[in-house]
Length: 119
Image 1 (cartoon, rainbow, N blue to C red):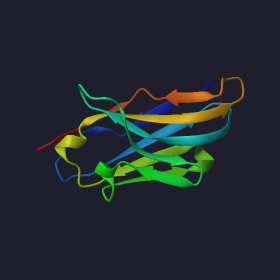
Image 2: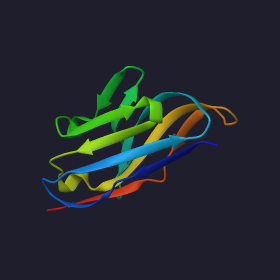
Image 3: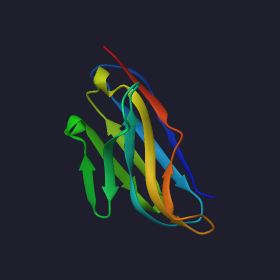
């Protein structure tokens, strides 16, 4: 059974840094796309950064501040967040398109981890 688990959220002052991690487990055959989304209260969930094939994509609001990295052999992806701003406050969710033995092919979400940036 596929599981997607995030970790690393917390409370930080503006200008600080946090690193989020996402681990995918199960009988994984392939991960076609994996990335981070965020959702602030009263707002729609939005893409933060993702790997799709060999390319990466960042939201304009986080370019030059956030870096996504992937360790393929361990099926993990991380998000290094620097120079955090209060507007980065949100629940952060890992999402991946996964092909696995014994599970349906599809898009899987983690439970989310909260990031709060104080001014």
